[in-house]
Structure formats: C-alpha cells, structure tokens
Image 1 (tube, rainbow, N blue to C red):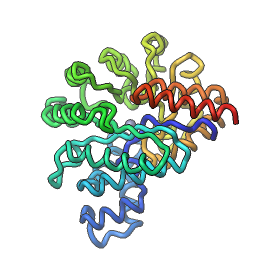
Image 2: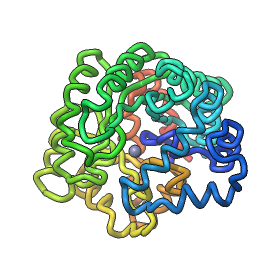
Image 3: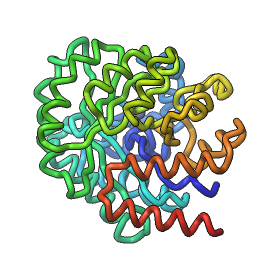
Length: 333
Ligand SMILES: [Zn+2]
C-alpha cells in the first residue's frame, strides 16, 4: 500500500510479537512455568475486547514481561525493525515508563532502554523512530499517581531530543474527569515538551473539547467528536490532527462501516492512520490502509493522511523534510 509510511499512534506493550511475549514471560517468571502458549493466548484474548476497561487488563500482562532493560530494549528494537520491513518511514512508539519499574528499573532507565532499542534499529535501517512517554490515568483520581506522572514528565524532559519526542496521556479515559490532568500538561507546556492526549476514544466526544483546551499538538483517537457538529468544527478550527486507529476502535465486532473516519475526512478534519496495538488489534499499518481503501477512501486522501502525519509528527524539521522528500519520490512511482 503506497502511502502506508507513517505510524504516530502505536503502543509498544500492545504491539509485541505474541510468541516473543510468551517466551519472555516464561523466562522472567511473569507467568506460571507450566502455562502453555495456548493458555497464554487464551488469557490475553479471552478478556472482553468489547469492554474497554476490561480489555486494558491485557496491558498488565504484557507490561509484566517488560520489566528489565534488555527486554524493553529488545521489544523496541524488534518492533522498529518490523515496521521498517513493512516499509514504514517514520514511527512514534509510545509506552509508559512508570509501568516498567516493578523490578527495580527507574523511569529514566526504562525510557533509556526504549530509546537505545530504537537507536539500534535506526543505525541498521532507514526508519526514523521517536519515543513518546505516556502519563497514566489510574484509579478514580489524578491524585492517585501524581508522583509517578510528575516523574514521567521529568524524565521525558531529560530525554527530549535524545530519542524521546513527546508525551501522551493513556489509560482508561473514563476513570475521572479528563480536566483533572490539565495541570500536568501545563507543566509539560512550560517545559517545552510536545504532547498528544488520548481523548474521545471510549469517552464522550466532549473529552475532545477538554483535550483541545489543554493545547496538545495532536489528539489520540478523538473520533467521538463526530457526536456533535460543533465539536467537529472546533477540531477543524483548532487545526487539530487526529490519530485515528480504525481496527482498535471497532474492536472484535469489526464494524468498519460504522466508523466515522470517512465522515471526518469529508468534513475536513486532519486525520492520520494508525494501528494502536498491533498484537491486540491483530493489525498493522498496511492493513489499516487496505481497510480504508475498501471503505472507499481514495489514494489522494490516503496520501494526504500521510502528509498530515508528517506535519503533525514530533520529529524535527530536518526529519520532516527528509520524510517529505521520500514521499515525493513515491509520488513519481
Ligand atoms: Zn492508544
């Protein structure tokens, strides 16, 4: 698929190779030593994928097998090389450093492991990678992991420009009022850290308005803004780019026709095409593009989505220019 070249919304812990995750979980004793691959698979995929809060438990399992420097390094390296094999030119891979400190790693060491893995892949391949560190929604109040989230911002600032490109807020969107997290983005803004925010994925489209007020560079998902014309207009007026993840949003029912991506494109929203969780959604960027073309999104529009992604990426200007040159070469093919 010609323009499947960028990936802005991709969770490391949701995009592992499942056989690697099983082997690693056994090796690190994160699962019972007698568990078979079939049992591991059944646990991961028997979790109700239609119930979002329930489905997030999958991440606890994959995070448990990524608690050591070598494992985070290897997982990032493997994902980056896989993306390069698929023909991806630029990817932003995200994970939450605070979820990988159960066995003694600091948040900074966890972040370093991912950037080192990405750096190795970039040395060997053509792909460009940026790491996004995620703040987490946990519990019923932003106060519950305030300390961890503040540390996430601190280490992100320390690693900014050294493989790390920005921040995100991930977790269960409906745990509490999204506005509770506004103070964290104020800190990030003052520190000069670019950020995206998960909003309007499982939550009401109004969350997209709350996220917009926090002045992010992009919004993760954001598709529920379709619920009101005024919300769609606000997204367009703000020049906001949405990181749309079609298969992830449709989950197991795969009712692609009901997804609002076509309407969003037709109304003039800047959309990008992403996989979210390659393992849990059993997809990848090429497949997402194929599905969109089956839904009638034309090549010109798919190309525009790729250009939107380059423009809204957290890459530096030189990298954006390099990526646009590669796209221009594709246009001539
Ligand atoms: Zn996501």
